[in-house]
Length: 273
Image: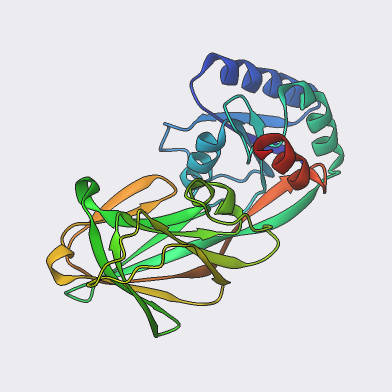
């Protein structure tokens, strides 16, 4: 391992950690490049590892900024919850040593993909690590027909629908009462956001978990077709004239680096219990 890229936000604590990392790597004869997440011109490059300094928001932005770079990602937490950020500031020497020795494990985080088809047949693709949220504009109630594997499931009415990955089950999904799913299990979870069940609309009131290779098709009602937001990991996209939104787990993935094979259970206990 020779080249390290360090993503960071602009908070003083993150800058201090990034500078320490750079000095340590360079003292070992390794190259280290710092990239602020607002620097939208730093996407490519031949790096061996991506280190993200900040919180979970910084991690998600960095992965997206890198255009889902093939080199593995690992995070150092200088933010809040930090579920993606597995390394504490006090563990920096250990991290540097293990990266130099290449003593780590990696796994794949498959992205969820939504393809929105418009009335003129155009297709727009959206990718996320945690979740795709489909909702109305300006917090308006949205009405949608929902199909799973081409089987009609529900005539949904409410604030929106969250479709999450297993990795994302501890994010927005969890805050609306969704189940926590171990990331090694490839699933999608569809969770309603403030669902309404009435004589006209029969909405599922609880989340449902399904295999990741299933396809969810959502058809917004015609009068709402110009008022749909597709939100990918917090990034809002306003798409006009949507006819259908098709969602499944994609073959695109991001490599995630771990120093401890049991870190998931430690994070779960420390951050949620």
